[in-house]
Amino acid sequence: KSMNVFLSDKDSHPVIIDFASTGLGNPLSDVAMHITHALDTEHLVDGGEEEMVDAYVNALNDALSDGHFYPRDVAIRHYQLAVLDYFRFIMGRLWRGSTLDTFEKRKNSKRKTRSIV
View: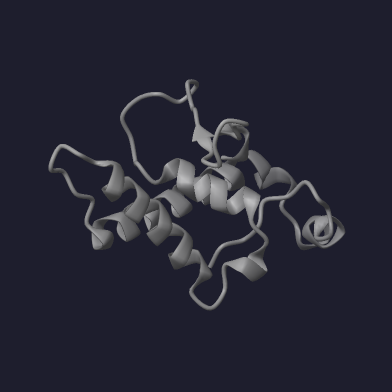
């Protein structure tokens, strides 16, 4: 998610740190959360969402030096599951206030979770 991205003055590469959630789990969970919070929906249409996931998987595979490889089809499946799990989390927290009227009132809010299809 966006709060885990730090920019460095020394180089142009962002540093991602996530000490609060260190552990085993779906490797694409943070990617799904980051895409959900950091990008507008318009950037995700026409293949934009897959491009973002592909960029992550390609960077990860380039960084792996021990002979391991994260197959794209597995990564896409993990990403889809992570998006569903994050949706479950959001709906669990917002269920009582989830009405059409509430969504209509909040649709232009800057503090929202963007929908991913």
